[in-house]
Length: 373
Image: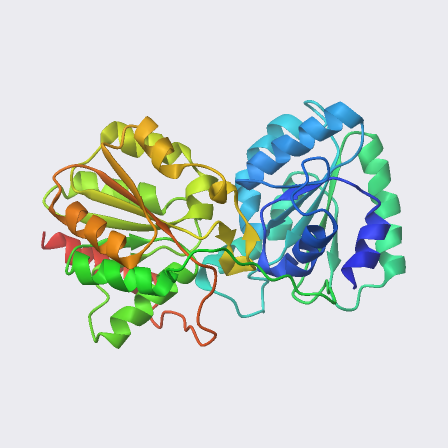
């Protein structure tokens, strides 16, 4: 279904959420129509954050908001849906648009398999009726579903539209760019060169895919790397746990700006514990690039100042490979917690592959490597 028709039938004028590749047509349409306009469209830090924004919108206007997300984000949203929106609590209506990754019977990445299996059952458990939208869904079917959903909204309940791959289309493709010069894959290549045999925890998305391919190109083993799949925003906490338990290892975390924003409280926890063997690197392209390139708030905040305020004793921003190399070597030799923000351009190789090892194999090899420390 064309996303313009889709939007007209929804008849809503406030959207908030976290971008998803399955919903790229909707995301591109919202960026063209509204851009980042707090009255109509806000890209949230995480899905729970989006539910809170939606609740505030309803309290102020009496209207029904739209919250969009990948189905992986249902987990972040369950608590505020159940303890804030639910009709047994505040009875706040909302329409959820959910990209269905890992749908049973459809091949997808390992992090989506179980989440895809329980996507609909989670909605059932929360008493949220839904329409599954795919390429065959007609505008009449959507209108009929929305009429039923409106009765839910009037009684302070919620509803959802679960979007299969190709369910929404948009004639225009948004292009996202920034003025940064360093490419993420090359930044990671420099990190690998300096970290050598140290353990690395990398965030979900293209960063982990690029790290895997760099090891392949260099004919190096993958045992030093924990490639976090899914669980966006938690790679730094995983790395913190490793660093605390393995004080004689220099532990590196390759993080992304969207991930760092999603669970920003982890920065405070890292800064408070301040393990001297931890190097935290956020590659900041101010974009949700893996799912399409929509902007994050990280292009407008000072991550270095945030980390310093959270207790990181060392925090720097680098914008060139010369600055990056200097910071990496300093961090390697440092005996205290170190943060590096690397300003990055948007874009990746079109032929970027995916890890050929399973998530379980990755975990077992990484644990075996750590057991020798």
